[in-house]
Length: 301
Image 1 (cartoon, rainbow, N blue to C red):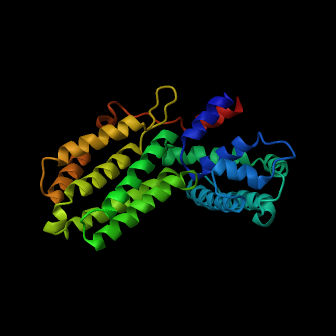
Image 2 (cartoon, one colour):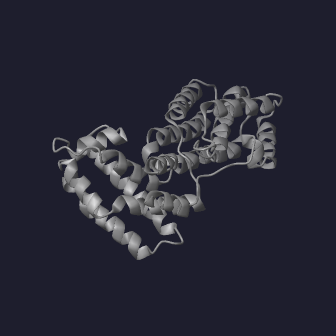
Image 3 (cartoon, rainbow, N blue to C red):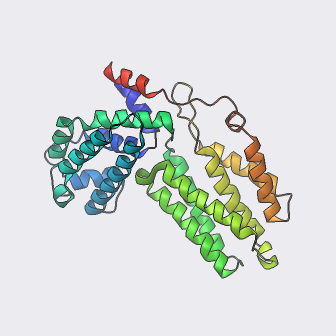
C-alpha cells in the first residue's frame, strides 16, 4: 500500500506534499559519499548547491504557512515540526553536510509521516494537483514564444512592457514549479488575465491590429487556468494532459475568432466558462484523491 500512497502524494501540488516527496525521493541517497548540496541540486534542478539549499528553505516556509491554515492542525505542533526540521538542516552547514546525516535526523524526528498527514488534510480542503513534466515543458515553450512575439509586435511600448512582465512571471513559475507548485502558477496566470482584461479597455485602434497576438495570449492563459483543477490519474482519476490544454486553447481561439473587437471576445469567453460546471469542462463527474483519513489508513497498512 505504501507505493500507492506515495503515488498519490506525488500527484498533489501543495508545498507540504512537494516537501514530503523530496524527502522520500532523497532517502535512497544513504551512502556517505553523497553531500546534501549535491543531492538537493539534483532533486530541485537548481543551478548550484547553495541555490538548492535556499530553494529548500523557501519550500519549507511555504509548507509551514499551508500547515498553519489547516483547521485540524495545532499551531504549536506545526511550529515545533518546522522548527525541528530547520534545526536538522541549518543552512549554514547544509550544503557541505553528508546527506546520510540529514536522512538519519529526518527519520528520527518522523518528519515525513507528519508532512504526509498535513498534506493529506490540506488536499481534502483545497485540492491542488501537480502538472506532468511534458505539460510544463510545452507551457514554457508556449509562453516564451509569446514573449518573443510581443517584443516584435506593433503593440504600444507600455502595453508590451506590461504583457512581458506578466508572461515572464508565468515562465518563472513554470521553471520554479518544484517550489511554487500549481498555486504559484495559477496566481501568475490569473494576474496576467486580470491585467489583460483591464488593459483591453485602453487598447487603441493601432493595437487592435495586433489582436492575433493578444488573442493567443488570452487563449493560452485561459486554457492553462482551465486545466489546473483536474484530479490525478490513479484508479480512474484525471490528470491535466497536454492534449487537454491544446484542445481548450483551440476551443477558446475558435470562440474569439469570430469577433473583431477583442474586449467583446474576451467577455464572451468569460461568460461561456462561467456557465460551464466542472463536469462539462472535463466530460464527466470530477474525481479527487481519497480523503485524508483514507490516506492515513493506507499508510498504516
